[in-house]
Each structure stands twice: as C-alpha cells, then as structure tokens.
Image (cartoon, rainbow, N blue to C red):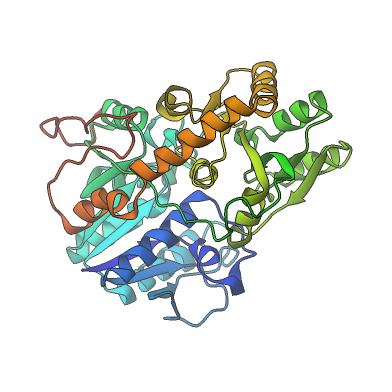
Length: 393
C-alpha cells in the first residue's frame, strides 16, 4: 500500500535537524504513524513544509516531499500560490493510493478535490472536539470553513478520538466514523534511575484555549510544590506568550522552559511526578499518553469521555481551586499517587500496544469496511454503520 500523510509541521517530530520548529500533537501523530507503517513494509511518504531540506529526503523509512514555506506568498494571493499549487504538486509527487490528513483545515478540501480528480482514497481523523462542530470550528475564514466541510463530506473514511467527537460528528454532519487511538513512544530512560525533581509538569503550546494562566495561579497557591512549565508561542498569540513568560519568571517555585522540541520533551516527563492539564478544549492529548506510559498520574481540567476520573488515571476537576486540592492530594499521599501510577501503566499496557492502535488506521487506509471497538474502555463500539452517510444539515 502506498500511503501519504500530509502535515506541514511533522518533520520536527522526525528529524533532529528540524526539531526546533513549533509542533503540536497532530504533528507527532503523523510522524509516528508514518514510521510505524513504513516499518511494516508499506510505501510511506509525508508531505511537509519547505524548511530547506532536500525534496524526497528520507527519515526512518519515510520519504518526505516539501510543499511550501508558511510565510511565502502575497496576502490574498498565497491561497492559490504557493499554497494550493505547491500542495497539489507535492501530493502528486507522492503518487499514493491513499492520503491521510488530520485537523480541521482548508487543506482537507484541497486534498478531497485532488483525490476525487485522480481517483485516490482520502482518510481524515479529527484532532480536537471543535473539528466536529459547525459553529465552533477553529477556522478563521468562511472560505476555509467551506473547504473543510467540503472535504469532510467527501472523505472516504473518518476516524475520531472519542465517543464525544463521534456523536458530535454524526449529529452535526451526518458522518459515520470509527474510533481510533494514538501511538505513544516508549521512554528511553530506565524507570527509577531518573531523579523525580519535578513535582508538577505542564506542557502545551501557549494558547488561550490551553489556559496557561491557571497553572500560574495554582503554582502561587502551592509555594512548596516544584512546578515546571514548557511551551512555545503560537501564531497570533505571541502577546499571551510574553505575558505568561513574564509572570512565570516572578513565581519562585515555577521553572519556565519556553518551547522545548518534541524530541527532547521526554527528558522533562522522565523527571515528573504528576502531569497537569488546564485546557478548556482538547481532543485526546498526546501528553496524557506520554505521562501514563511513564506511570505519571494526570491531574486535569479536561477529561476525554470521563476517562481519567473513571479509570483512576489521576483526577479530573472543574475549577482551579478544586484542581489545586487535587494536586495537593496526589502529591501528598503515597498510596493515592501509587494507585494512579499503577492504573496508568496497566491502562497503557492493555490498550496502547502498537498493533492494537494501528488496527482502525489500517482498516481505513486499506478501505476495509470493518468496525473496530476503540482502544479505550471509555468508548464502546463505533456507532452503527447503517446510519446515513452524508453532509447532513
């Protein structure tokens, strides 16, 4: 099978020469999925941004094709050139049987047009709950929202991260979907040999929806707890980054690292006792998996499908004061922390083996009409395939 993944930022999760480029969870997942399929003998390519690398350069068995530089082109015209034209050029050079994309974006529409014209398959996976909404899409321009919805209607298969997303996608767009988990890299450090000198770790790009202000408030309320915060600026939210950086430097028990490359972030996880998430909105955070695979409990204000609280993988909270208390309890009780740590390791072992995670992806990419149960006990089976498959309202 020839499969092409499309994610402009994913090279930073593959190559140390490009590791300082800003990325998020979807870039990580595209990189890990492409490498996993290449290891299994598939012909895998990845369309990425033009970062000066050689076109066709190969990383871990994955051939990369460069599209365009994000900053290139004239406002108002760059949608056509270089973005549309160079994207199509790159995916044409990949010459795949099936293309894979994730995250609500106009790119999905452009891919759908290409695949329809050239009779190729297109697989889409949602990345955040708002990808399944009509009114709350995190897409600025009406043109781009239309293109996303055009592509969503024409994707050959859709994967989702949670039952919440699955139900919303069916209700808002009439599209059937299959639940799919995420890959997680095994830590290289030997458990027990790295000093646990970080009590609470917070990792995310600095964005308003991630609510970094909350972890500052909690750090001030727990002056005897050692907090570490890692995250770089997001486009359009640079002022927020500077504000958080300035405030963080005034909190004695908080270390602010700024942006840390994905290929290096594992070193901070290895040192952490608890992972904290303060977001208003997520999909299924990669950081949860990075914590749990190390036996690190998650204390969070976002709990996908109620998984954290129900499975004892940490604790979930609805307010800053409640979360502050939850962190105090998790750090202050050896038995509470150990129980959550054991549950996290058992959960990963049971549900996140690579072969199990890849099942729904391979079924979708190969065009098999197979319903898979999710790798999360939170979910149950995919919604019945007999439901109407269309754009909906």
